[in-house]
Image (cartoon, rainbow over the protein chains, first blue to last red):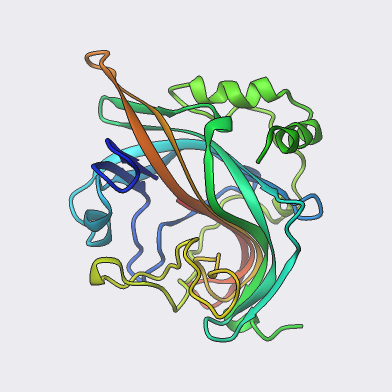
Length: 147
Length: 143
């Protein structure tokens, strides 16, 4: 979750993420099952977290090299909604070893962050600009070939 | 998501759109209570205690390899990049890239400034093989 003083990509001053695990697991944090609500039939999902512990690495490069960081927390609620006009995509990608059924979606997010004495609060969710979002069901790794 | 989609989703959760929109104004946390409908996956319990393993593939921003594919651009041969961050996984996934704006406040001075954001977030929920080599059920947020 990145914050910029200029247009996105310019003047980054905050980069909130939980860090990269020693084995390479990328910015992935266990959360309670209660934080997620998925209804694939309706094409909707909601992911919510309150005061999730993260680090503020301040910029992407520093985050990737596990540079100096400050303890921070983020709260968010994000809602996926499949675009009805977009067809269900059945994808099998043997190169990257995953298969599944996916739908192009839109996402709206409301989020906040706290680090030190700074608090960030996003504008209303309706102002979110969706760049690329998908929702679906996936198999990979040892489950890639399962029927 | 257009307003119709939001309204539909909110009807499903039996709350008002105002509740959702108002959440962004809460500096100490944006998540309002009672938004969620029952979740089948919740039957699998609470927070996982065994971490999953990363996907083997990925990209190399700044020449640094990471086990992650960005939501965009497409890297083929399929029509999407792999959404999951974890391997040996069978379950529900979501990923997104969104942008927007907001307000940062220095609570020690009261000074505010406008900032722009990009969020690449997602979730994985289902069956996975953990670092211990055993199968587990769990939910993970990509943050």
